[in-house]
Image (cartoon, rainbow, N blue to C red; front, side, top):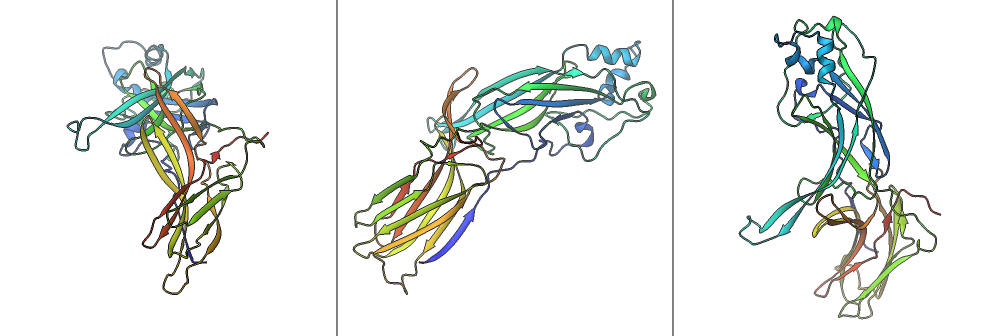
Length: 368
């Protein structure tokens, strides 16, 4: 039968908040969403809250040129609309003239989403003599410089709320491409950004988006199979029992080969791959894999071999399959995400076989 090796890699799972390398002063504005892990389906309604400490307005409250009462001044600063915006950007690399950079590629960024909503400020704000903090709560990403923390003597905290609070609801558009969190192109990222008219900074948190995937149907949820023959008449066959799978589910793969000339076979490998294409730039991630190795010194070549294995799909958050679609707000590009199973037969001193099964479909939808 041979020896079996298994390996698996889960998709990247970044931290919920993009606030690395920041001090306490730069974390004073809080943006929270109803899903703590930041994972949302396209088409969903996202709800959240915003909290702006009074210390954020320190530079205005300490300005002696202002003769208005602190509460009046803060109300004036917040009189303009506070905007929350969902921003999505796709980055891909394209081949250009070799003189463009060291490897002859250039990077392109395309905006795929800009969806706005307004923050509704609460009428009653919490009043305390000193601002309170909660060490278990994480907050925003200030993208440039930080704001000094006010001393209690600088602000009349006894007469002011400790924080200005508000809520928001944002409808995530349908048909957005799923997130691809990658430290190099290609990538697709989404951030939820708070824009204050009194500040030139944007405060943002990271979101992970996925479609719900295609709806399974008995007529299309059929066995997937493929086969190939090399020049030495080795016939490799492989199949899965169905086409639709949910995150966390196992995929049964059956395979066999016919070897009429009893050629020496070194190994057979089965690999589950996540494949993402942004324009013409491709990303591949191995999710799971199994390998059979055959000891050529002690085993006689087999005329026929049969094997099966279970490949493991990661659990949520895992992006559902996304069929090839054209996306973009000002420029249109194509994106697609699918899951593929690759089988490789390695022959000693011969012609290796590379067999690719039709793509499986990963979905969060229930069957009809």
